[in-house]
Image (cartoon, rainbow, N blue to C red; front, side):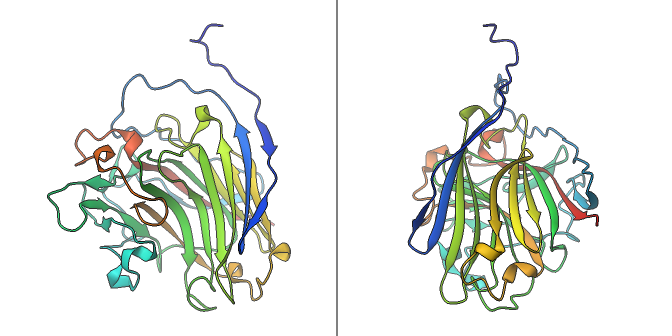
Amino acid sequence: MNIDNKISFIFILAFLQGCNVGNSDFSSSIIAGVIQPAPVAENIDYCPSKQPHSYENYSLLWLENFDDVGLNQSNWNFMYGDGQNYGVPGWGNNELQSYTDSSENIYLNNSCLFIIPTYNNSSDGTGYESARINSQNKRKFKYGRIDISFSVPEITGVWPALWMMPEKSVHGNWPRSGEIDIVETINEKSDELVTTIHYGHDYHRQISKTTFLNQLTKLSNPIDHNKISLIWEDKYFEWLLNDRLVFKVNFNEVENLTPNPFLEDFYLLINVAVGGNWPGTPNSSMYCNSRKSCPDVKKLIVDYIAYYEKIN
């Protein structure tokens, strides 16, 4: 077989038996896909500049393609520190990073957003710094379709997340008003896609699925980003990876969801956490000390975010 040729495989989706763990509903699947050529060298600030798709039943409502010189603060807010100023020290997970707006940790280049978790043993605190932004009070979402073109870092102790929280906590504090995790990964497990909803009017409940990906289609792919999609209707959520269904939650099958927090407005968050209860202890030697010469496989990279409304 000529290994220089691009070899395509038909997608195979094999579902494994789900299991209930405590108060959570966990399930998993395996998905294989197209072999992509490996990069010949470590890239720095590469952006594939993909274009959002058009869909027959959807109209594009908002596009963030990160074409500005700096982060558009009419769309985004920076968050700062270790969580204490927000009433959640360690961000509720005993995390080690302090969030900054420094260009060492977050910046735009080549029409992509880059977030770098860094370690510097001469800095204050734990030495870990990263970035976290949200769209609260600036861009809100309810129903429709959200597409995100992205690549995640592969480092021990890292936790990149693209997720959503309620614009107004009309049903009470977390988790009563809900949380939507569009995509999360941890450590070097970029071949494991984690998708989750959090809720619970009596206690914290969650429904989560881990989709195991073929090593050649893992989520750390700065050369050719993957696309995660959240389809949000008033009766269900669907998660799609590169337009293939990987997870679905029907609201009428979810225990104790009334009143349903997922019928309200939510906002987006993008961040990279380090350490804590999940994902565990980081390996400081694996982290970049600064933006200079930091390879893309150690960054969370977002090419675009596209929000569509459904056409009736």
